Structure formats: C-alpha cells, structure tokens
Image (tube, rainbow, N blue to C red):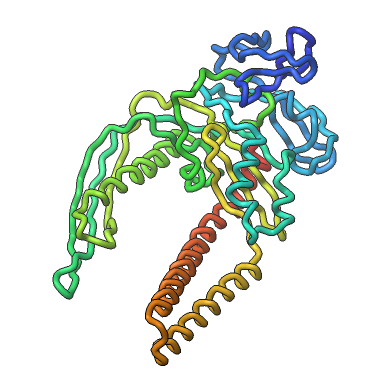
Length: 383
C-alpha cells in the first residue's frame, strides 16, 4: 500500500541515494523507520500488495501503489487499472537499494555501451523507463556440509607426463550462505550477482519497497535443501581443487558425493537488483546490476560484421608483419629494426589471442543474458 507524506499527503518513494522516503510533491524526506503505515503491521506473517492489469497488453503487475499507477512496465501504456489485493508472505529482512537508477545506467554504459561493436540501437534502449528495480528473494542459511571427492591431475615427469589421482574428504560449518529463492531466475546468474553484504540488511519494512517491484520465493523446503547442497558444493569444491599440489595441472573432480543439513531456521531476505530488459532482433536480453554494490552481470549483443572486420584487419596486419620479418631476415636488414618488428608481431598475436578468449567469455555470458527464464522472471514474476 502507498505510504503518504504527513505534510502534504503526497506519495513517498524510497531514494537509494539518501536512504530516505521522499515526497516528490513537497520535497519532504523521512527515514523509513520513522514513517508509520496504519495499514501495515510489522509483526504480521503476511503483508498486502496491490495487483494491477494493463488494459492495453493484458499484463498483470503486482507492486507498490507508488509505481504501478504510472505506466505498464511491459508495453509502456499508461492505461493501468487496479485489479485486486494480494497477500504475500512477509520476509524477515531486506538489503535496501543503494545504487540509484542513474548509477545503474552509468555502470552499464561504462561496461558495454562505449564499445564500438555494440549496435547503436541497443545503446539507445538503455533509458530509465527500461530499467526496473526488483527485490529478489533469497534464503540465508547456516548448514553443516560434508563432501568426499575423487580427483585427477596431470604431473610432469621429465619429458613425459602422468596422471595422478587424489582423494579428499571434509566436514565443515557454513554460515550465512545466500540461496536464490526463485526457481525461475538462473542460478548461474544469481551467483554472478554476488556478493551481497548482510551487514547492510534491515528488518523488513514495506516502506523500502515504495517505487520498486519485488518477487516472492517459490521454493519448497526440498528445493531449498537441493539448492543449498549445490551451492555449498560449489564453495567447497573450489577449495578442494586448491588443496591439490601446485605441480599438478588440469585438476578435475572425477567423482563426488556430498550432503547438507540445514541448521536453524532459514532467514527469508530480499536483495536489490536492477534489471535492464529489452529485445533485439526478436531475442530477449537482460542485464542485471547489483543494487547494493553496482556490479554488472551479463553482456550485450554485438555487430558480427564489425568484429569480423576488426579481427580480419588484425590478422592481415600480423601476416604482413610476419612476411616483412621473413624478408628482412632473408636480406640481412638491421637487426634492431627486425627485433622491433618481432616485438610488434608478438604483441599483435597476444592481442589476437586475447580477443578470441574475450569473445568466448562474451558468448558464455550472452547465453545467460538471452535466458528466456530471466526475461520471463522480469515480465511475469514481478510481485
């Protein structure tokens, strides 16, 4: 429900920059803990949200009254009408947005939009109306975790190499492990968003939601336990691999068994994330920005012809330099000059290798960015 300014009855919106509720009508500002909503009870198990429907595209939007009455977040049409009240399970706490919408746009621009291979029409889509602040559900757990691994690594012996095998077993206590609370949001994507720093967390208060969307967890306890086991395994397996002697390379876990026991009651938290969603050539794209730290996750589509042109030009330049170096060697041209050309060739090949490696990384991120699941999370799961 909307919280109104006590000075002019205007709607209050939470501003990440000031960490206060601000009134756009009279300019008054208040700390969330100092604002009392007569319709809300902080001890209640559930809290009320408002459901709106767009009469133009039929999209259903569940959000604070302060945001949904402006325009449809899907089609941009202003014809939004109230539908019903929905009761949602009350979280234990949340981390308020610290990064503003303008800062999120700036971070995306610095990371992607100044790159010449990004299409101009994509850069034009990074506007405030396409950036949405969504509180994403997480469960924070304490767990007892046990794991046993069988690994292999290649060790060099003289001029030959041999494969060696290792075994590791451990039992550990893990505390304050964040688990993504939505089955729709890709786990790999949510992992890339981290870390979230729990020292900034607040007791849940609906006032922090004013001006933002939020989503509720759809995990059953069985799902939570499974997700927790996978997350703990990822954390522990990274340390297990580090424990193998440094002279071993290509270390891999061949076989593993692990289990987790969740201790205490899981803490239900809401984490702040900015979503930049758009479609390009019929494909969905979603860039995420951690609303607490500003970390950007995902990548943008690129112009294939421009990449081919750049790579081709670099390849031709390297080929020409190699040919020149060969001719110089054949005709005994000044050694210093030849040495300088050799350095240029080496540098060019290093750049070319880095470009190829970078493209592979971009492609992996692009698969996450183009995830229909994430796109639908923003479009259908906003509550």
